[in-house]
Length: 83
Image (tube, rainbow, N blue to C red; front, side, top):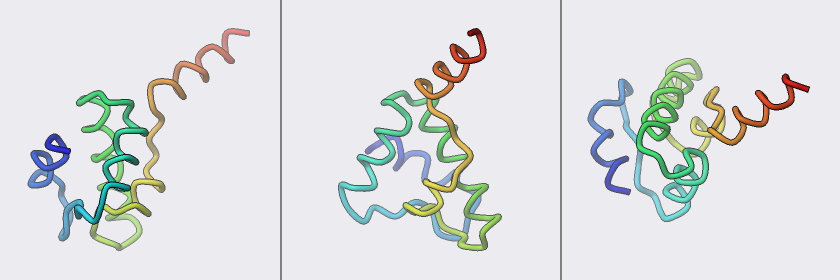
């Protein structure tokens, strides 16, 4: 994921996102639904989770702990609130 690589230097953590394998890329792609703006938001939220947990690294755990809701999840929440 080139976009993740370009954002790597901007993550305010001691150890930025590690490219450990295709699973990490798939997790990023799935959660952000393939949009660069969403990827940026997800990585920012994961950086916050990394700092708050003391891990100081964006990894699969901090990506899952990130308080990020993707586009589809936000849309579903909005639609539920309308009914």
